Image (cartoon, rainbow over all chains, first blue to last red; front, side, top):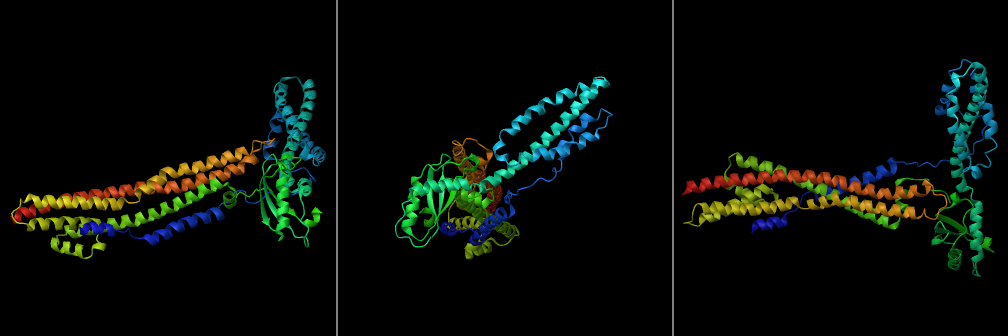
Length: 260
Length: 228
């Protein structure tokens, strides 16, 4: 009897301390995750770089021309020096049209790279007279190759910058969006002032509007509703010229004055 | 209107889809509960071990059994499991012996049965909540995985209509989804470790209790033989 009562009365000790400790464990973990872990937390800032001189040659690529040149006792230093001034000339023109040429250029360069190594190997066995011609050609080719490698690398770097840059430079895309939505807005007659309404729009890659959420009301309910209807009516939204400008979540601001 | 390069944990969680967020919330609650029970069992088992130790020392140091019984009855809520087992056995023994004209083996058998019953009850108390830890350990990785699979499905679906599929389109979605697995594992690993540890501790306590029951039965047997 009394044993049964004892069992019913049984209570595990330390209820409160263990709750506090459990909470503490989670708070510590959360703090660690929030403040301790930064995965790429800093945005790669979109810095426009003007190339005044060729960028420092990367370590990995310098190694490549060296073994090809070694077997010959002919003045090699030129090979190392010549590519540099040329790089500047080559690099400067592609810069403006980088975004357009992105996709095409890397493929062109892949081909010569692969073909290149084969002619080197038989070369040292030939006699000197011919080998000079060949060497001259080889040098031309090596400089061309190293130029291309360098160019590749720079293009690659610029492409990364361009990707970050493109997102901010899509004013044209916003203009297109606003233009389409503007056509669908039926303004309520009694708007005073020029209050700004901000909407969060979630769109599918096809441009279809998934959801519209009013983030910041203009203070004028009829106006907010009118714009919201217009956004929904504008589905599918126009697509950006460049697919990488596409964003799933858009933030669109509207002022009544600009709609008139 | 800027690309979300920010991959901090918070933004990953807030950007995840509703179902994934639900899974994360569920796992967080489960994780909290499992840590709560981990600490509670830790305290409870430590206390049980200390009390058992103390009572065994008292018992085998040759102190008077009636005195032990009285102290066990008096502060029952501070008594440990082993003390309660002793109390139940001794009470039954004393009651049965008081009835005259019975076979001397009967009080011992009765005491043993009473101790068995108390032992079962004590073991039940000690093992309380342990199954919860076991389920958390085995299930929460799957729950986390479910959230991850769902999130990855979504992030691939958004890829379907893009002309040029790049890793950048899916990577954030997958990272978001994988957080669910991470939380699931965070809940599961401590739970499994604690479960194994506590199950082992409880087994050891059980062996001590059982051997005490046997030894105490022997003592009672001897006593009833002497008193005849």
